[in-house]
Amino acid sequence: MTHLIDYNVSVPAVVTDQVHIPIPQTPDKVILAELGIFIAPHFTNNRVQLIANVGVTGDPIEASISQILFRVFRGTQEIYYALQGVEADFERNEIVTLQVIDINVPIGAHGYSLYVEKLSQFAEVTIVGPINMSAAVYAV
Image (tube, rainbow, N blue to C red; front, top):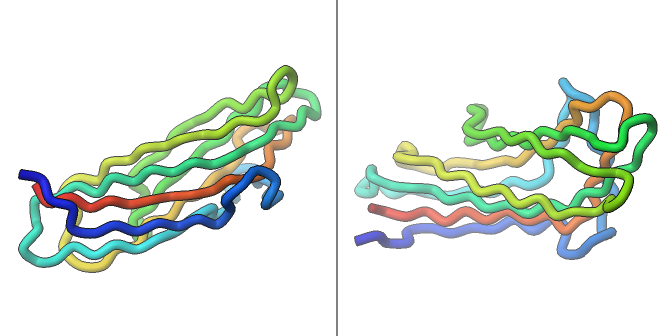
């Protein structure tokens, strides 16, 4: 039977237009959220479920679609990345939702962080909120 053994949230921005964070051009990146969890020694068979929501808006310079890359790290180790296209012509605002499953995480305390960077050179994308990330740790 599955048991919830830890839970944490990070909510840097609760509504749209609460923040205006320009997304930097790769290889630079900006951190959006971070949180910590703890796995006790007797829960070696575990799952960490991370869910993040990020509000973005596109602003075309020469391109109508921008490519942004979300990265999730556990400590200094990248465990996930996802590419997202952001339209800047017809519908400029969108909420990006990510779900990450980290399996059999080592026992102890761990920090998770969410980063974003822009791959498209001729378009601007801005984080406008909301920004939130949650982590649920399950023993299986």
